Image (cartoon, rainbow, N blue to C red; front, side):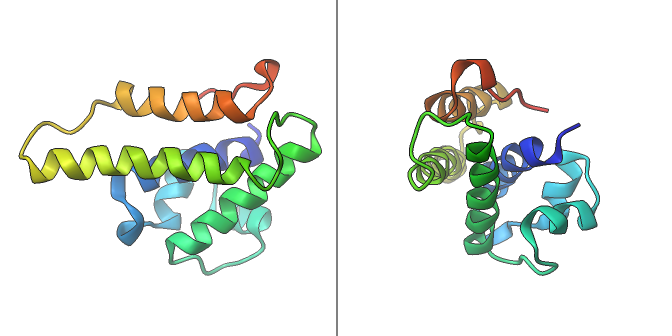
Length: 130
């Protein structure tokens, strides 16, 4: 397992499902199936309580992917594309809750996430969800 590749997806899932106020690195680690020290190794910090730091994690992971030559976008633009996708998914969940409707299915959220990944990654490098 390549933790550097699974951490961005896990981070996005937590943000989509829980939203920024409930962001937790513990949840990121659980989804990515990594330990906290592995997460901190990739981001260089042991304290990430906010969405702002989640964006920093996402940016660091995208930079690592860029180092492999896998991005189709500029390294500065790719995290924004992913973050926007995450915010859209979070809004879908929040709106459904406000309207007392069923939240979007995991498949719908996965489609949004994969679409964002496809927009920033070269086709041979598309990221598969865990």
